[in-house]
Picture 1 (cartoon, rainbow, N blue to C red):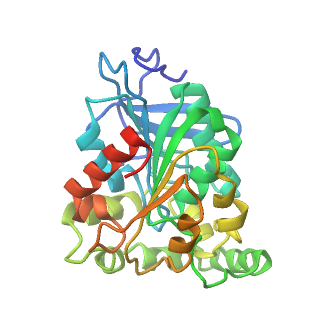
Picture 2 (tube, helix red, strand yellow; picture 1 turned 90 degrees about the vertical axis):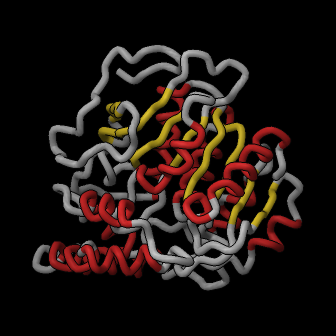
Length: 312
């Protein structure tokens, strides 16, 4: 049974899932939402005794070989105690169920929507990283009354570079996940050396050692390969996301924080936001995709202005 806002949970799982030896990503209670649609969804929650006058905040990690709520730790640590605060671990990652199944954009958006509907239960501010910005946008279209604003950090979907076709994605996923070499391929991607290399590309300086350590641990849990191999096949990206998702978000304030990113292009972002009064774009440069790690104070201040005034 999920927790309810500002009330003690009736069923608490403060230890890692029985199927996982992974330590908690955040210094906060860890809960689970059982879902027929999305499986066992893990989430962290910090619920102050009095958060009246504030909206809940939901943080959503990115998608890569080893994502988790550790990616949003600076945000969680800064905003805890001020408002009802949640961080979801999307299906296939972190403490959530990691079964061999079909991972899709609809699955991830559905998990976000279910947490909003069944656990948080009121209009919420969302912060989503990278590809999860597309899932957050899709969730906003599914449950618009549950989302007050979207803050998208280094969002995908604004590059001029086209995605491979869905057919190519399906073929790629079949090849990547073949029993003979799927696990071996993932082991290469999830090696400590590989994780350090890819995370270092997301920082102007070196990536923090604790972030690398947790990503490595997360990537070495049972079933860890299934969702990342879907990501590597490109099948988790929505074709024409700018038109199919973002352009439909006309009913709520949206902030895109994007400067440079080694994996994501933003060539179409400035023109897109300039044509839409509810959309705002800030660079907070210099950073390489994770400003809440590299420029935390500026990121926190920008978010707070956005939530208070509807613009940064």
